[in-house]
Length: 534
Image (cartoon, rainbow, N blue to C red):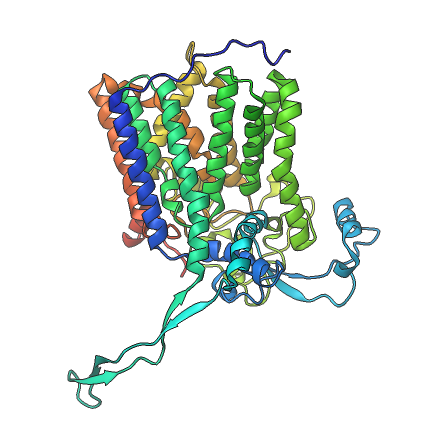
């Protein structure tokens, strides 16, 4: 098939003045809000982001991926304990283990192994961050963990009088501990702005352009842009270092390139390279998104074989090679350390994962004691999965319409489902490839996390089902056909507004701390309808 034989579609439509004004207001306000939140909140919000910051610190301050000496290491449970030397797999070892051992330099094999702490997060993202910060760290000479100290002034303090309940005395005191100002703020804030806020700004600009081409009327255009700016959990997690917003931005950029190629007739090599690079980078930051990368490659190969092989594949190879290389340099293995969940790497003495609490308690199979999780048995399959604290049906319910439900917390995506079906089964509807990808990935990811025996905690203490955040751009792109009836029908208009109201309220509830429980879970707990182990 000739890659250049398809018909070219019209150029970008001219945007009306009303839409121009609304785009400026919405995109500007949403970006400013995201920037303000990022600058105001703490740089280290929870175990998830601290784990990555520990790797960044270790790379820049110690030149190693081991995080033993990091001053923040004790604040995160997202770590593993592994020997710093590779052991000979022997004749009975697997092929991959033999390859890993043969590639290792002598220094990785010789000497007495020492158990060290490593972040359980894939090392690619922390390595990229360390690379970005390296010139600044070298130029300034200021360590990432440096604390600026400020002496305190005397002040009056009210203290209870011993032996006289209810009475107080006024004492002039100077606090012993000085005020501390972490220098890491200047390093870390710039990275979060660069990796989260800037991509969000670009995403909103490009999404508005997609709406110019595919929104059927003004109601659809205005509604979808506001939903993209404030109606999803991406605007909550933009303030903290995490892989989910980066994966979501990557997925959107890959989809944008796909739409330009598939639906609009663009045949530029750069478009194919962009689709390949961002699709692969999405998978490198959200490992189950590898399904998206594979499907994207296959559909592009079938329709545009030449351009896919010459431009898409080399661009996609770059992040994949970087992922495997950093994984191997960090831990001496190509297999992600996530695959070792439930083994000694996680369940070392004193590990949080030996006595998990709250949402993580649901990770324990019902056949085990709270202090131990069995090693996975060889030959296990979907047909003999262990029974967990919640049945699979209950877990599926809470992932979709329950306390972490995609559709209960963000009901605008119910209209994305309607839009997906309208595109797939409608006549002369554009975006069919995107709609099919959306349907397949949504069903596939929900099924994967429902029956995945190593992920039974809804993502832990987190606002929303963070494992599916990378699919949000898919849902937003297919949203317009689902809400377009609001232009003419009052019932549809009020239903979509109600869905937007709940979605934005869920985001507002989460803004102060993304690593906390959603409002539905808090409500169920306060009503004594759902119980967490604490």
